[in-house]
Image (cartoon, rainbow, N blue to C red; front, side, top):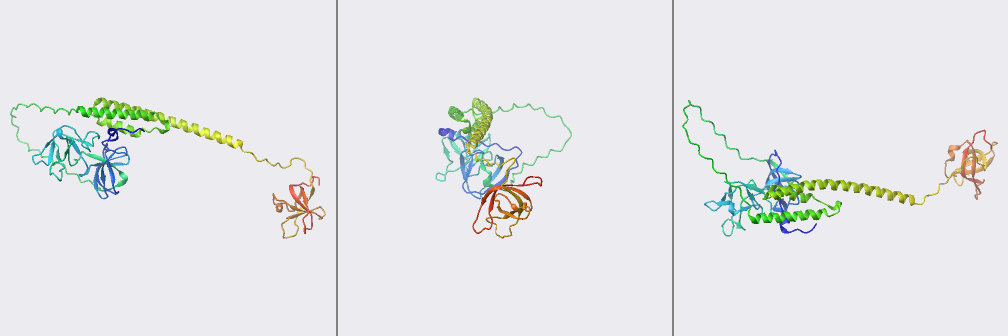
Length: 386
């Protein structure tokens, strides 16, 4: 995949929370655990967590825990959307749906939003004693609305979250005899605060980043089907679809997500077809290789009528030695004809049987009788010729 510009590499995503999830407190179990802006490795780290730190988990997604940013994590918002408190140690939000970011610029996707009237605690520079301000952004202690993600394997649940109790409802006043209500002239409702209009710089930066993502998708689709990976690119389009400032960008991102889904289905079908073709090709090559192997000649036993070297009855030769012969062949009068040796079978099973023998006759020194090395031996019926 080609190298991208800094703005695309810094794309982040605010995590989506699970519906109906019950928050809890968890403890970090690993060292130098990365807290990321979204629930995947595609999202850059924004803070490092150490063993024993506690986090408030507000959701879970694909093996990731969605957590509130800890107090020492970076959290910024535009200076133009806040008003400093009289003591200079905090701010009141004056804008509507103001984005919370993890760096003093617009290169990162928001990690949350905060609304008009919210109170924020300023981060104070230890050297100057003044609030930290950079690039027209102010740094604040992360409010509840600022969230990140950490791999669930590096945390463990320790206790339920003890949320602040909701304000007690005000009891209604006791009823009194009805009196004519005074006629009060209704005051007009306060005018709705206008939505924040993105700056030209923000919109230009967003369009540039989106164009780079489009080129990234084009380059990825030029690869062979087996090498294409669209999951990371899809996550980026999903973030544009949710957080883009321009409506046209959100619409385009939605269209790309649908196209990626269709493309992934086509790629899956193509990969399946290629796998099947590869399996068939390997099977055919194996078949050809097996056919090319020289086959051992099959030694056939003689069939049909056979001329026996000798016929007789199998018996014992009365010796303990099994070599060069294990048994003996007698004629019908009990006369010794030959000693027998059968390397391919067990003559003990033929003891007392009348047989016909085919083989080679050999004479062994110090052995009293000639030995037939059996090539074929058949059990004969009484009616067969001797």
